[in-house]
Length: 298
Image (cartoon, rainbow, N blue to C red; front, side, top):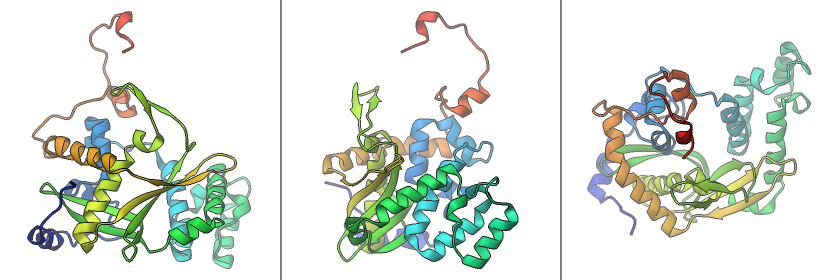
């Protein structure tokens, strides 16, 4: 059975965690004080890279992917949120060869709409994904509720934060939007010696478990998690994906197994481990011992 907090713990948690806002949620300063699914998974991937990022010494190069994701999310949040996002990031969204900065700015101010014919290729793809979802009756019917909801709480004594794409408390479910290359793409799991779906590969079940617990602590409602995924293919595919209970339990076990160690790393009590494979580790690596040709592969 998934672990839950009692009412006294809930009240203490809600009292402590009242400082997160839409404007500061993604600030690195909050990631020092709060754990999140994003950074927990980063720690699982490479502790050294994650600590360098939190301390402001390293910035991963995923700006384009982040912007494309936020472009799609803001569209389904509200017209105002989408327009605001486009205005704030217009130089990254629009193709400079197709429209000058002046023309782009004028188009935004006059029309209040993105200049769809001037989007760069990644955002043209984002528009196709948006159109695929927006024209689907099942999506429109299910993607109903409060958008971009900040939820907070504690898991085994550690402060956690989350931001839920779509929360429907009345019907008892929440939805997270995901983009992926292909719905049926397989990823090899070295530890398990088997194939994973994209959901398992990116450990989205951990995010769903955390959100479920934080929603429960914030609102007192145990909600069912769903992922609505849309692909980056020329003709995007889409699906509503459920998370089996055993996957949620796996995520719970992983958090309870690794959380104390990760908190020790964050607090500086334990030296962060280098994965040796990420961009940060490669960019900061020094030549050391000589490696045999027979030891280059696992």
